Structure formats: C-alpha cells, structure tokens
Image (cartoon, rainbow, N blue to C red; front, side, top):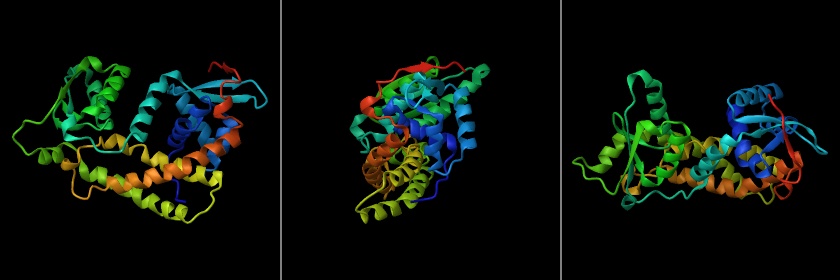
Length: 292
C-alpha cells in the first residue's frame, strides 16, 4: 500500500516483536526469509541483518525438532523486558498525560573519565521522551518513571542518576513557553506528518475494501508498525494545554489505531500460515539451544 523504506534489521525487529513472540519466540531462517521477501528484502540482506543481531545478543541460534525442523533464531531472554517496554509505549493508551499527573525529573552527573556514559544517558533519556531542561536535568510526564527506572537499571546507568517526582511546576517562566524549549516540537511534528502522509491513503483504501488478503495485510502492517514504533518514544504524551496548536499527533494516532485494528489480526494469520506455528500450539514442540 506504500513503499517500504525500512532497514532489514528494523523490519526483523518488528516481525519478532509483533508476531514471532506470540508464536513461541522462534522462527526458522527459511520462514523468516520467506516473510521478509514479502517486504522486498532479499535473502542475503536478511542473513546479514540476522548475523549482526546475533552478535549483538538480540537473537540466539537454535534448531527445532519436529516436522518443520531446521535452524532458526529465537529472541534472547535479555530482550524480554525490552519488548515488554515497547508494548507499553507503542500500544498504551494514546491519551496525553494530565497536568495534575506531575513530572519525573532525572538529574545526572557523570565523571569526565566516563563521558561515554554521559552520551548514553542523554540518548536514552531522549529516546524515552524526556525533555532537556538544563545540562544534566531532564524531565517527562510522571507516567514515564517505571520505564525510565527499568531502562537505567538494565543498562547499568542507575548509579549516575537521581530521579524525583514533582507534583507541579513552580517556576517563573510560563510552563508552555518553557516546554517548547525543552522538547523539539517541530522535529516531532515532522515525523508525525511523515507517518500520516505515508499511511492515510491506506486507511482510505481499506475503508473501500470488503475483503483483505492476509498476505497483503502483512505487507502493509509491518512497514507501518515499523515506522510508527519510534514515535511514542519521541513523544512522551505531554499534557494537552502545553502542546502547540493543531498538534498533529492526533491525526497520526488515529491513522495508526485504525490500521492496527484492521491489519494486525490478518497479518498474524499470514505468519501462522507461513510458519506452521500458532499461539495455540506454541509450547508443544521443545526448543533445543544451538551454541554459536
């Protein structure tokens, strides 16, 4: 329904996160290559991306016994909290936070000898949706706190950070003005606009359809979800009174919600057909770990 411009490793990440996890966490390399072929990714690109993900510890190589035996890859257990966090951010309630909900403030100090940690902290806090209020001071709506704690602990960065919960802003500058300096609204809106421009035509097309082939649903859903899943991290869901007028996240969220509702089920049906796996039988066959 729209051109796929995602990197192979990103598409594989999305396929595992949305589908393979629901089917036991393992997929044969042959079936994965077949699925990615539907997204115009050739076999060498899939194998290259898998190799990098294996080296990074994201995937573990395994051989599965049974009628569809063969070498495949399953998600490393270390990735479970990463994908669980992704589910909460990507599919959580898309309503903005309320002003009365309060804020989480992160204050960090990193010795110059460990400045690489400083860069990691900045990038990960930004990825979680924190805005930068001052050097070493970041904040986000209070609901981001659980994910922030889990991420910092998982990366071993919790020793450098102090987290505070604040009920309300008591500064001198108008909060709406200050927030516009702490978050890059134009950059966030540009990504929402790109998503809406790319996928709104698909919504119109689907509304005119009375049937949808599962393979077609898969081909549309994976690139759409792959593009969308970055946005909830950049946008922490700031309270509506603090947002720019005509905040275009509203239109983008409506597009995502409708496409997810229409495409996710048939897309999973297609993956089950290709792999022979299903949520109902995911634990029937044993998995045998194959050392690298």
